[in-house]
Length: 107
Image (cartoon, rainbow, N blue to C red; front, side):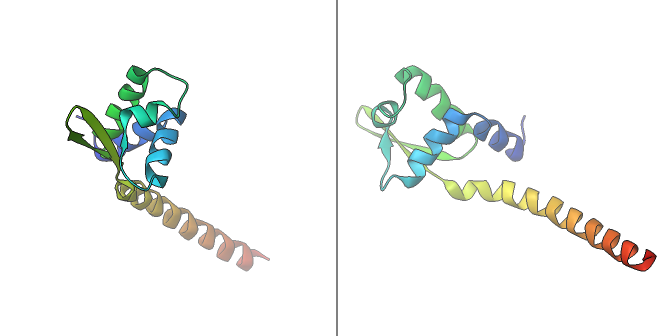
């Protein structure tokens, strides 16, 4: 089973999925799959496959109303990636600070 970070990176690795997610984030309400499909030059089936990957990563929620499926973005789920990146940002900041200290003492 894939961990959360792996699912998130898989979901956002594709430019079309990023565009779909972006469209949902800036929408003022949930969008139907038809409304999403109309924004892209691909079949509804193709868009649905991308939506499934985004849903599996937890980046969107699907609500069923009658025969229609509506998608709602969950951008807060990206916080897991942010936390992962912050560790490495701190790691490199510390190493670069030590390198600067070392170079200052060599001069």
